[in-house]
Amino acid sequence: MLSRAITASLLLVLAGCTNIKVEPVAPQYKISQLCIEENPKVVVGDFVDGLQTLLRKHNIDSRLYATPIPDSCEYRLTYTAIRSWDFSPYLSDANVRLFKGDQQIGFGQYHLTGEGGFDPSKVASVEEKMGSVINQLLGQNK
Image (cartoon, rainbow, N blue to C red; front, side):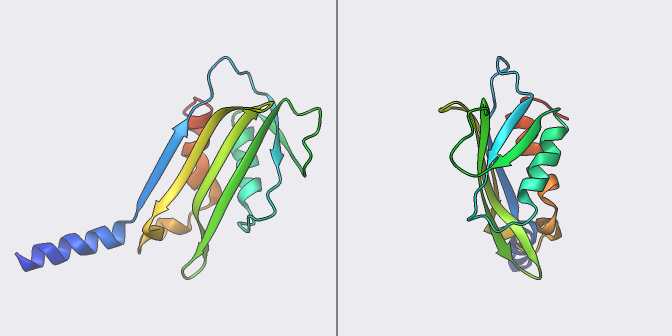
């Protein structure tokens, strides 16, 4: 009995767990371009590049801007991202919010529970981790 408890505990520690929460954008919004608000507090170096790659897969062009919001931005995306450390840095938590004007029209969250434990996939790329979030946010499964 004790060996089963130890085995179960080890599996939980090794597995880690990813939580994704998404409020998808309604199909009425036809987004072909958006502006990404630069967040200087985010130190995940490839986060914006990864987001832009994922957006391009949905045929959405994007550009980065520093506040204030340019008048030409009909849609804008804001983000937060937290980096954790093990043997190397990795993305452990991220939020993206999509707006049309001042109205939020979508939300996506990635969270690595327990900072991933010993799961080697915790050091996956931003694109791999955020791909499902962006796909669900935009209501597509690409």
